[in-house]
Length: 225
Image 1 (tube, rainbow, N blue to C red):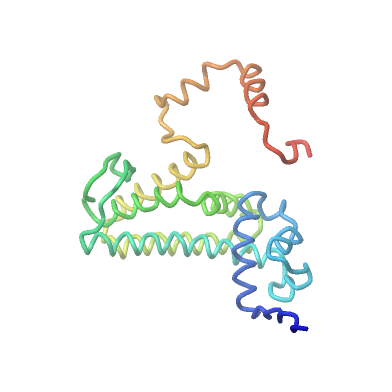
Image 2 (tube, rainbow, N blue to C red):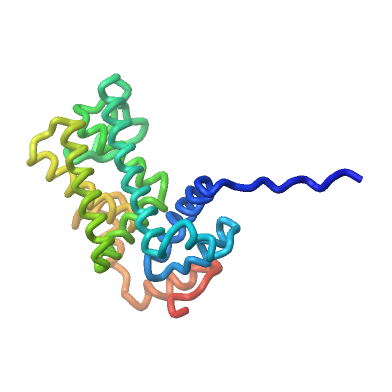
């Protein structure tokens, strides 16, 4: 008889990375307080006590997830600035920068970073929603302190990579926050003149609720559950 295949022992460092990836996905959906650690453990295929052998608490795991989210944004800025310096910062689709809409060659590194950030928001919803969940969890003092620090680092990084002055950096990050909200809502912009704003206001609230409930055939718990 042939010997049974040996099950590979996964190193703790590898499991830690897998758990952070799972945590990014789960916390993005239901936040710090609404996400059971058991669900994250099950996603990776480990027992819940093992999670706590690597992370001292659910908050520690949440902090590791939000750190990964901020790291992703920082890498996006760095790649975009490098692409601009090397003449590769060309948009393949319409994107938005703090200066407005457009496509083609970027005017400067800050515009390249804005374009790359918008593409990130559209390509990876987990990181978008995790960012929103990170801000929502800022009633927790430790979470708030970490988010403040990482946000400040992003501001400093954008300034160092672009050489932009304070006023342009302020516009850049204000526009970025608006992009976050627009991406979460699944719309292109937040202007009062946007077509989706006019469309939403044309519906009677009761009619709209009926319309949405009739098209929501997906599985999963109800809002009351």
